[in-house]
Every structure is written in structure tokens, then in C-alpha cells.
Image (cartoon, rainbow over all chains, first blue to last red; front, top):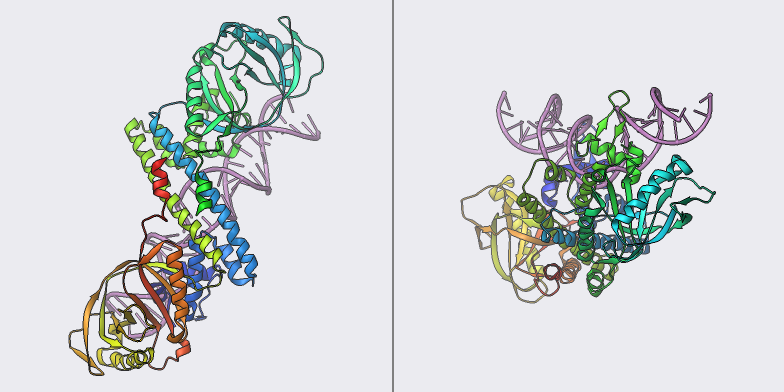
Length: 285
Length: 285
DNA sequence: TTGCTCCTCACGTCACGTGAGGTGGC
DNA sequence: TTGCTCCTCACGTCACGTGAGGTGGC
């Protein structure tokens, strides 16, 4: 029989680990002196300790290990738990590999760029008008009239954020189709007309993966944010999967241009091959 | 200005996260009402929040992020921190990939085998004799005389565990060279002779990576443990790198054979190629 | 008697999630 | 007045590491 000190030296673990495993009933000493509380371990407990350590090395939690050792679980169940843990590990590997690549990408571009964050956005109701535009200025004028008229006409509390969708390739060409309006906080029914445009209410599809960045200042300089988004999307193995959106976080009739805060959004999807090698890599092994 | 609820909805994070970041001074609201404690965030704080989220996605801790954002660290320092994080991630990836492979290996062999644990063992002093052996029985006789004589002759407290080293290929051939004796707890000087063999004291080299498993019962059945060790070593991409050892955890003159507890040890080293592909894989990317 | 080992609290870790319990503005 | 949102505790998480403070055997 060995006391914690010697047993821990034999197994090359810490005394505290033995105490802890005793405490959580994972490995009780063969005998505990009721007077002194001294723990006495038998050499024959080494295999159990070894099994615990081996399973721990596979990344299983102590609770899982306890179940595997104690509750008379069948080989099939153990097999299942290991399969589960394997899947879990694979997920972690894929995630960490993505992180790894992101760091590499960020190390390449000199770190100081706008920060890109992935989000998902739910389905929303959208009160908007859609029209061909020829310049950014034209857009700003139209946005101006919408912002000054709509809140009064339909009630401020019914409106959420102002949002623009660019249906053409880009803002920065001479002819493009764009859509402007408000996300709705609650439904409205009466038809609305602003600046000779008929507004419609429709569903905006939910987007699972949206690459976003925040731009502060005039829309005329938003290309900075778009550049960052584009770079990020390519560097991290995604591609565009829909029309870009702009959410105006801060926008009232008297907001100055330099105080604008706009979230630029690109729906994206993962490019499946060949950049994303890890799954193949794991399958081969 | 937005309250926590709205700001959290805009940024798609939880309110608790905002409270927590306030608490740890990572992102203070633009204004806090001293009366009510209400937090007011400005839209212009979104870029900072986004930067925090983006860095968090890279796996950095909030403490690291705080340093990167606040202490006016230079771009070079940020670069350094990212490089460090990259190395850290690579280490995690390699570890997890090993775990992954171990699980696969364990799933192949029907799970119920002896458990193999890796350890490192320090340099130790070793009082031993070395001799050619022809059978396991001969070994047991020799071990018997050492165990019954040495503790009395040199003092029990000077001795640690009994240990055997097999210098030949294996126990289970007809002729092999073996070494038997005790690990020393303290130095001894006088020459010792047992059963017409001269004992010597020498250094036993430290071993960095030792694959071990525990065998309970007679040494005549230790091949079970050896089989498990061998399988494990091959399946996990290691190779032998020294002579096998056997540490007798429980061994006194009157220990019965079936009560023996022996730790079987193989010094091993990693096979560099081609099984261990991950580093290549990362470098290519 | 001095050292060494043993013991039991109990805090700290990391980044929040999850109630509990109470208050203020529409 | 009823709901809704806000707030501040404070516990729980996971597997121990790290003292603090005190006791028993050689």
C-alpha cells in the first residue's frame, strides 16, 4: 500500500490529482484511514489510473471517463463515445485550422485594417423602393428624402434600421440598381409613396453567413471598408453569395456625413475546394 | 446612443458580454448614468467591439486583446503577439491531430486492451548485475535471490523500486542479456556480491518519452502487455529508441506471482515521416 | 525535538450563461 | 397599472495548481 506521495511518484502524477480523483469518486484509494484521513493506494489500482490517464489523453472529460469505467457500459457504448469524441476533435481541428489561416492572412496585410466579423442575420421585413442609380450623390439625395419623410409617415416606432441593397455589381460604377428603405419593427399596411417612387414591403431572406465590417464616416469613403471585406473574403477561402447590404446604424435627418456609422455586409459562402484541405487530410489518415 | 439591449442586437452579441466587457474595462459604454447605472453605447464604439470580436476569433485571450488595444503597443509588438498565437495554434493542432489518430487507433483494436501512457523518467542511480539468461525461470530465480538478500544487505531505506532491463531483443527468446537490480534512493559505497555475481552502481539515463503499461500478475503473461505496447507504438507513429525496462511496483520476498504489479516500459521516439504530415501541411498553406 | 508527509479548506483560473431579485420609464 | 428593459449580485463551468494552516509518525 502506498500513501499519496509515493503513489503519485510511481504514476508520475501530482498528489492533488489523486486527491481530486478521490473527491469526485473517479479513483478512490483502496483504503482510507478514518482517523487520520490518510489515503492508502494499492499497486493494483495502477491499471485503473492508467486507463483514466489514457482516456484523458484522448481528450475525454473526467465525467465521460467515469461513465466509461463505472456504469458497466457496453463495448458498443464505449465505441460510440469514442466516435463522438473523434467527431468533436475533428470539429476542433477544422476550427483551429481556420483560425490559423486567419492569423496568417492578418499577418500578411499589415494588421491595421478594418475588422471583419462573421454573423448570421435572420429574415426581416423590409419597406423599400428599388431604382436605377447613376451616382452616389443621387443615392444620398434619395436616402435623404426617405429618412426625412418615412419616420413621420409610418411612425418611428414601426421602423428599425435604414438599409440599402446594391443589386448591381458595385456602388462605384456609373449605372447600378439599388434598393433603399427601412427594416420594419412591426407590420404596416397602407401603401406609401416618396419622391414619386412607390414603396413596397417584402421579406428579406435570412443569411447564414454574412461578412461584415463597420465604416464610420461618409459613404464616399466606404470603399475602404469594402476593400478590407473583399480581401478578407478571398484570403479566408470564401466567395460572394448574394447582394451587398449597408445597414445605417446611426441615421437621422440631421446626422452629419462624418458621423455616419454604416455596417457593410456581404453574404458569403465557403469555397469547398481546394483550399479547405483538412477534411480530406483526415479522411486519408 | 443605445442601451445594452439595442446595442447587443446591432452587434449580435449578448447583453452579458457587453456587461462583462464593461466590468473588465475592455469596452466601456460611452456614457453610464450615475443614477440608474444604465449603460449608453455610441454607434462609433462598434468598430472597437468588432475589433475585439475579430481578435477573439483568432483565439486570443481578452487580456491579450486589451493589451493590443489599449497600451499603445506598436505594430511590431502586435505582429509579435500574432506570431506567438500562430505558434500556439500550431501546437494545439499537432496535439489534437495526435489525439485524433489515437482515437482512430483505439477504435480499430476493439477498445479493450491494456492502457498505454506516455511518461518521461529522470536519470536514476541503479544497483544491478548483468548477465546472459536462457529462460524466464532463470530470471525469476535470480530476481528472487536479489530481492531476498539486497534489502537486508544495503538497507531497505536506501532502495527504491526493483527494475529489470532487457538488453537483448526480447524476453521470449532462448538467449538474451538482462540486467536486474534496484533503483537507489540514496548512494551506497561498499561492493556487493549476490549469488556469485558482482553488482555495480551506475547511472541510468533519463528517458524523455517512455511508453508504459501496467501488467498485473505473473511475468510469464507479460507478453499481453508487451503486445499492447508494441501495437500502440506502431499505430501512433513512434519507434523503439532503447532497451525495455520493467519496474516491479510491488515486490517483496513473499509476494505471490499473481500479485505482482509490473510497469512495462519502452523508450520511444517519434517517427518523423511520413505519418506526421501536419507540419508540412501547415507550411504549404 | 526537528523534518517530512499527510490532511482539509479555499481561492484562482477563463469568459461568460443563467437565474434571482429588485427598480425605473412608457 | 401592466410589460418590458435595465440593473447588480452570485453561482456554475473544468480540472486541477497553489498556498495557508494544522496534525501525526520517525
